[in-house]
Image (cartoon, rainbow, N blue to C red):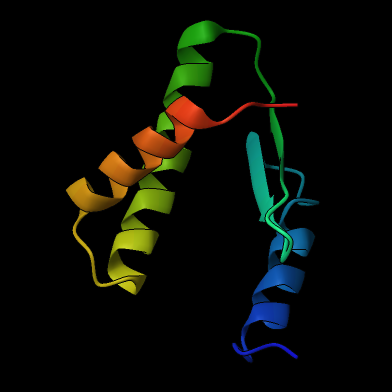
Length: 91
């Protein structure tokens, strides 16, 4: 049973939004109940500077939302995220 009643609504809206024609960059990270994680990341560019910029925008959005929702500050979230990224093995 879901503990957050908005979860399914936000998940459905996000899935629909990825199908819009004007999307330039997509990132979806999934964390499963059993601890597995997976990601989907794509950009409509091959240019390294454009890729860095869109990735930085996405990271900034995620950090801001997580900081606000977890009642933490941005530095706490970025430090924790950097630590997890260092230890993460992508598949």
